[in-house]
Length: 150
Image 1: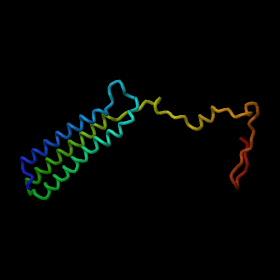
Image 2 (image 1 turned 180 degrees about the vertical axis):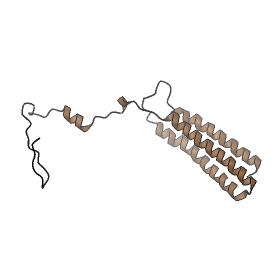
Image 3 (image 1 turned 135 degrees about the horizontal axis):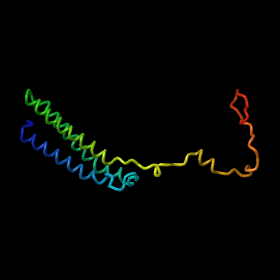
Image 4 (image 1 turned 30 degrees about the vertical axis):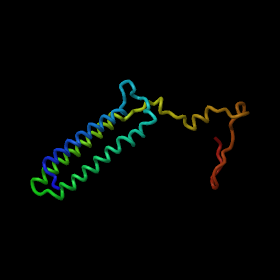
């Protein structure tokens, strides 16, 4: 089986259709206008893993299979044109995935991304029976060092 012109055209059209299908499905995860800064939904990772990754995997296997066919069955000018077409398709896939990543990436606002640190939590707690006592305790040092006053 040679990777001839009609087969090359069919392969190119199938990749373009796959890119369009990928973008249609991926657009469900893109940040909607007015939702900038909000966290994403809990199912976003599952949707990506179960719908988008298999599409990428199918076309990745298919395109690398096409590259193997191009490399083993083409010589001279046919090899150059086959590699050129393959590189164009690979570049388009990289552009599609990069565009999807750009549109789907969420910059989460700081008010949704703050967790109290242990230090701030401890400073707000009152210790029982220590509010009226002075804090002049001696800190116990590790072995081999001197004690110091706070």
